[in-house]
Length: 228
Image (tube, rainbow, N blue to C red; front, side):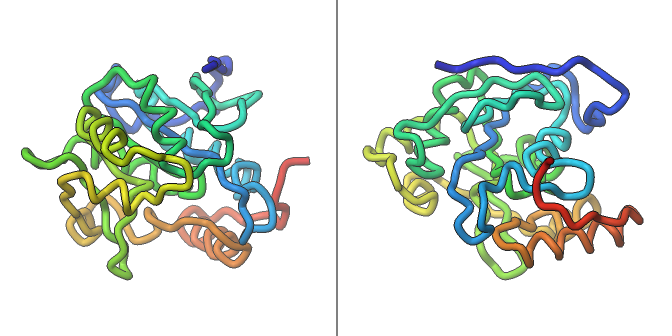
């Protein structure tokens, strides 16, 4: 059963980066064993916040957020938590679980290991071309990033149904059932840089992210990887 978690508003809330009462819903995927990281990634600390908190804080405050994964005891904003079935069933299973709770026409999907991508996702949700089911960014290496992408909700539901078995299904196989438009960060250069699509899979990725934050914000990163 989904559960709602919220936190009292403070001066340390996420900054407004989009319209209130937004016409899209964000699905944040926090599952995954974090094998290459050596621990579950949502609790990994980058600067002053965990990776999942970075993602949540980067999304517009007016957007409904559905977190697929373990309940978050103290999220920095109101969220609804649900679980994939079966637990540990992979990103498509998580997406399908979150999709059951979406009521808007547009769905933004973001993985918890993409701490700099929240603002980019917001822009993507308003740029899906007519006739496309999805707008998927392409990184500097030419790879699609479907876990930071905007989808038409009806098309996404149709694709999940067409895929059939969602357990351990790949996002690539899901995209095969969608009309996908691509966009490169070059097309969004005035808004975002290449770090927007950085995903943190390994300890070296984490160190690279700390270096990016030091360079862009002048903030010295601590060496801890988790709270406590």
